Image (tube, rainbow, N blue to C red; front, side, top):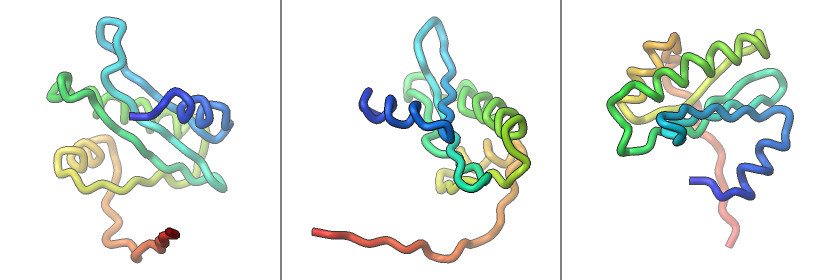
Length: 109
């Protein structure tokens, strides 16, 4: 879950798009789309645990892919580990690219 401040900072950026799905006026699913150099990255795909099993995340992913195609002809990518989520991503047209090189990370304490 994001704080209101984090959401406001993201929404102020022209390269950030937040999609949310509502049931009965309450948000139950969301996904974000971020761009860098014309390449889109899917992040933060989630559904409220009380509303899982209704394909809400899959539906929002269809909308996210359509929005990406309206905004860019560039690549759209994501990382996933959850087998249920991976099936949903495959269903909306994502194709597994195989292992990616390890990412660089660092800690400062």
